[in-house]
Amino acid sequence: MLLMKLEPKEKFSFLQLAHYLARIDNEYGVKEEEVILEYCAEMGIDNDDMFDIDEFSLEQTLKDFKSKRSKKIVILELTILIHADDKFDLKERTLISKISEAFNFSDDDVELYSQWGKAVAALYQQGKIFIQD
Image (cartoon, rainbow, N blue to C red; front, side, top):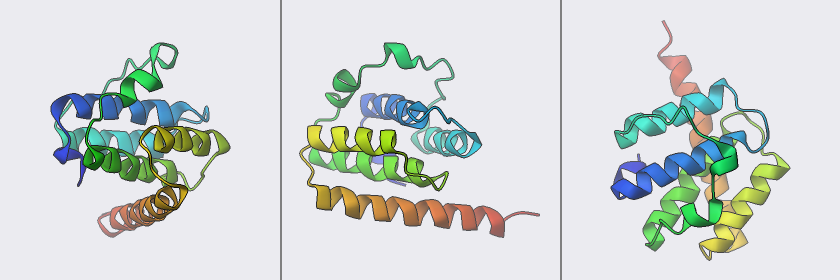
C-alpha cells in the first residue's frame, strides 16, 4: 500500500530491514515470510532468499532513507511485520526504538504507528479468512 511510494534503492533497503526484523527474535515463521512476500509483490521486486544477518548493517541501511515521508513509510510497514505473528518481542521493540531514534521519531509517534500496524495485520488476517475457499 505505501511501499510503492519508496524510491527503488529504498525498496531494496526496506526489504533488508524487513528480513532483519523478522529474524531478530530467532523466530522467522510462516506469517513473517508471508508478509515479506507481500511486500515484495507490492514493491515489484524479488525476495532476497539469501539474506545474511551477519553481513547486515543497520546503520548503513538506515542511511538510505532520506525523506521524512520514506522514514514514516518504513516504520509504518515494519509495524505490520512485527504484529503479523501476534507477538511484539523485546528484541523487536529494541530494534524499532533504534530505527525510530535514528529517524528522529518520538515514542508517541512510534506508539501510534505500532497501533496502526497491529490493526492492519489483524485486518490482513481477516481478509485471508474471507477469501478462503
